[in-house]
Length: 213
Image (cartoon, rainbow, N blue to C red; front, side, top):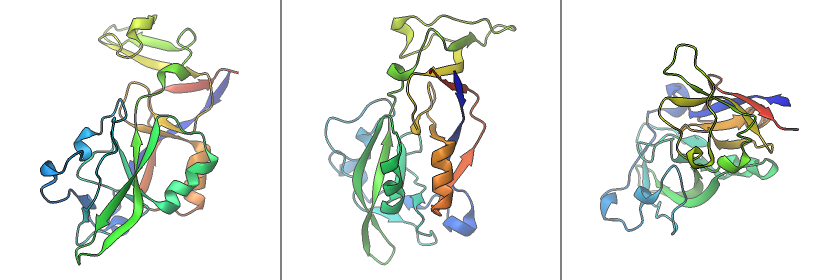
């Protein structure tokens, strides 16, 4: 097995870069908008395309390639520029869809060069559960727990993964049994080389990943 490293993808909190936290606010009267972002969930894609128009860029916020938002939260996805989206063409993605969106600046100008990157749980079929390690963290010695087929979607109470064996390589996906988004070191390097703004990376993942070769 080959060890593979992942990092958490997060919004930048550097005010010198982003100008204001969070950069985006929701559209006015969004509760009255049919199929608005409330239909977006972290565990499945919506049956219809969401209406993601007229999110408001706060007056002091800067336009970066990834925009932090009051809602939807990062557990659902990210607002990203076309430049950022274009990087994904050469990488392996899991549980990802892109939706068109529009952003309105304080002066009323509308920007349509951004998309919403929706991330959902689709990692279950890519995990070798027989070789992966899950533990019961309620016990002092954290004994290993065998995960049955019926427990794969929702783990038993007090059980969490320590080592995940992936069947296939992937560069961006939902962190198993978490709401964070993971990126490979290869994708991280490309994001940095291309000067993508508005993102940060965190290596405190808490799970070891291996590729089942």
